[in-house]
Amino acid sequence: MSGAFSKEKPERVIHLAAQAGVRYSLQNPYAYIDANLQGFLNILEGCRAQNVEHLAYASSSSVYGGNTALPFSEHQNIDHPVSLYAATKKANELMAHTYSHLFQIPTSGLRFFTVYGPWGRPDMALFIFTRAILEGRPIDIFNNGLMTRDFTYIDDIVEGVIRVIDKPAERAPEFDPSHPDPAISNAPYRVFNIGNMQPTPLMDYVHALEEAIGIEAKKNYLPMQPGDVPATAADTSELDKWVGFKPNTPVKEGVRRFVEWYRQYYNIL
Image 1 (cartoon, helix red, strand yellow):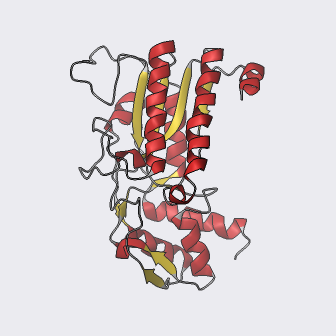
Image 2: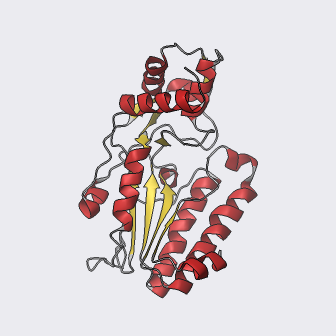
């Protein structure tokens, strides 16, 4: 990594690599320490060595953990993670703040909310559901379907990332260290939610997929999985104020685009 930084000499860095996923963190916790802590430290050290103008990195809505005050806001406390994955993403934000404070490296953490769309992770629900429905297999519905997620289409994530990387974080003159606001700092550090602001019940998401595919899914209802939370919802007002952007792709449209891509990519007509 240090060789890549010294050779390329980047002016700005977008760091999206990580060991992702809540459920896998229960099976292989060491992978999360290696990738999300040691790996992120390598990125921070590269940024320090090259004195980069701005680092934007992927955090996660998982950092809100046991918080049930919806919608989630960057001004809320995130001291109660419910999975190791969430703990490592909170740790990334703390590590970034340290480097922003010590070395004046502008850093922006982007808390992604349930990203979906073409070229996504095959272990995410949309891939798993689509494959199972097309193959005539049942899909697993956790917490008996009583889940809500702020599903965010990939195009909106990309737009948000690009806008943020083009506006480096700055220290907030209004920051009060006697009453610290988690969303800002006296260092050049920011965190932003990137979510669709349209919390969608899981079953509505499934119905949108059934409609796009044209097949009704066979459903296997199961209890809540360890590390999961019942609902997420993003308050993106800070992102809007900072870069003038709000994710806005409706779930039905995003799911339709995904199914079109999936059929073409896997040659399923």
